[in-house]
Image (cartoon, rainbow, N blue to C red; front, side, top):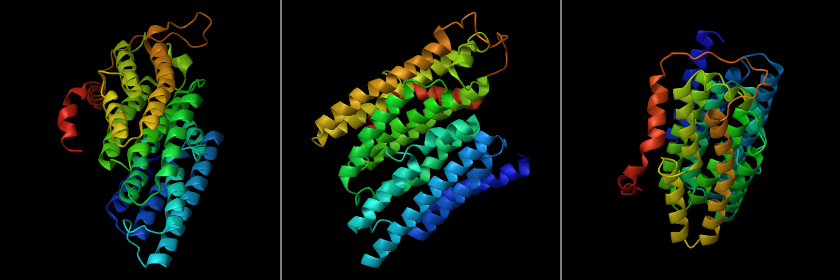
Amino acid sequence: MNPQAKLVCTISLLMGSTITLSSNHWVTAWTGLEVNTLAILPMIAKSHHPRSIEAATKYFLTQAAASTLILFSSMVNAWHTGQWDITQLTCPTSCLILTAAIAMKLGLVPFHFWFPEVLQGCSLSTGLLLSTMLKLPPMALLFMTSQSLSPTPLVTMAILSAALGGWMGLNQTQTRKILAFSSISHLGWMTIIIMYNPKLALLNFYLYVVMTAAVFLTLNSMKTLNLATLMTTWTKTPALSAALMLTLLSLAGLPPLTGFMPKWLIIQELIKQNMTPAATIMALLSLLSLFFYLRLAYCATITLPPHTTNHMKQWHTNEPISPLISILTTMSLILLPISPMILTTI
């Protein structure tokens, strides 16, 4: 992909996200989402491999369907209430259609099928954008409309997402698919709390972005796409492998790492809202995700490659670690002690 095309796509992505985040009218929010979709498509399909073209096609069809549902939902609401304001969503039919549309945009169960396939068909850098930046506009819409939506479908989708994200990630060998199911699982945690404490859901999203970006950039730096290659990276970049292991454990939500903070606060908030059964189910389902994060961490640092491996043993390199990876990894590990300060703001 030539630099000019990449620059145009990047500027369009930033512009689309900004339009959606700053809008209070449904049509401008929809326009921003469409700009985002059209800007990311060339970045997904840039390798001209059949798998990439397939991923771009799947992404386009699902996002187009979701955008159509968002527009339809807003039109139904405007028909009933005469309001195009995003926060004035009062028609029950519109609320239900919008819940399905945002779930499709985010990749929540049962609208998650496209996400692992698209992530598997694109590069790690594009996968990072799909998993983080492109989740922000739909999350912003969910944040603005959360008080109007029905809690039953949201809680149901959240629990199913946490369950399927954990189950489906167990037998994967491709790192991009594992991270896709990890994303689905984390989105479940955000969705279950967004009605009761939207600021806490946003905190979870920000920390998820930091940790996921650290993992994607580390894997991109090591040029690792599957577990077999991951097993051979310890000899090449021991420092990066150790950092990757700790970041993965943080994503799993193990104390005393940063990833424990949102899970702890969400479970606490659910219990305050008399949703102890839901909190218990979510805590148990996080064990499924923990298993495949531990598997990844084990492959990254503890396992030595078998002698029958087809991969050539890599030489140790003295390349400096990127400052961005260092900053994101540090944030993924040591933010738990500032929890009391964060609690005062949410």
